[in-house]
Image 1 (cartoon, rainbow, N blue to C red):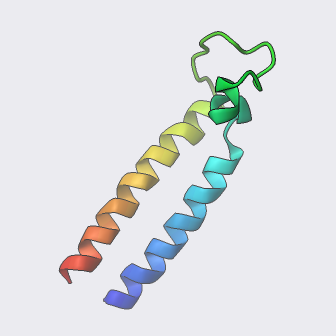
Image 2 (tube, helix red, strand yellow; image 1 turned 30 degrees about the vertical axis):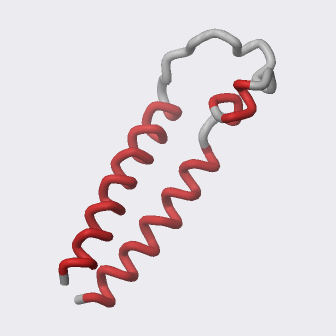
Length: 73
């Protein structure tokens, strides 16, 4: 059971890394220092960007749940 949890946790973490890298670059720390170009105003997330953002949050919650489950087993 521990092996299944560990492998699942590794897979989820790799997918989270990929989703974070797919997100818009100007939304991060570079946007604070003016690296965002003309995107200095607030934009709502639409389409694929919203799906990637929501999936990242969902997978982070799943990752946290897997970590807690691995501690308890």
